[in-house]
Length: 297
Image (cartoon, rainbow, N blue to C red; front, side, top):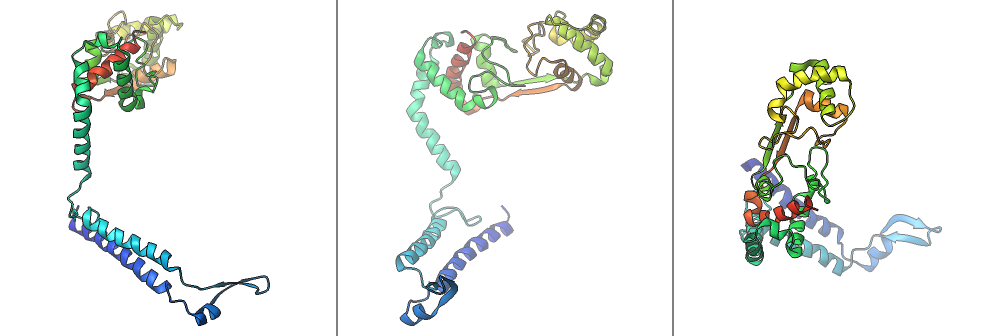
């Protein structure tokens, strides 16, 4: 933060506090019998039988106002809030977060370490371990994959045993630990619109769906030239590259002709963030057991 903005915040904060003090002092006039009888705001009802008087606030109410002002001053002295001033207590959100993480690690670390010694396939049959893994999933993974792990467009369904990078416990754990970056290059410029339509027709036939035989035949030649290197000549995909299997009628970005055409024409960029540094290997081990178990049911 620059010195200008630091002083800007200080002036605004202190100025507002002083303005509140002035406003209270200005409005808190002492109550006298004369002022109570004579000072009427002008708001009257029932032909003057009811009138609003300009009486001062009760002392207890004023005390509450002054108490909040004194509290704000004490708070800004103890904690950061006035520009670059860090507060006498030296508190920061980062230090508090680190203390809470350290405390949680001391409490729950031994539990995760105990489960980390067991193979993932064994943890699948441990109800307590699966419940812990499920809570980790709901906290860290459900935003993208859904609370039921059913996925969404661009985010894989984790319950169907169709895996881009492999379904073994080790491969699942590696995906969570290290993340994945999937790149489908755009082929619209190379194929042209008619070429995209032809390849779409051929891809549809790979999964047993109906398409124009004439377009599919032309699309096969283009598929073999541009697509087979990643998706394999028979369309079964390549888990080493994360290239999807095109024969099972399971689609990451949608299986309609339009969705497939968009994928071919414009390409796709898929990112699964790495969780190794954030969660640690022991938590990922339990999380992997839960996710692996979903596809084994």
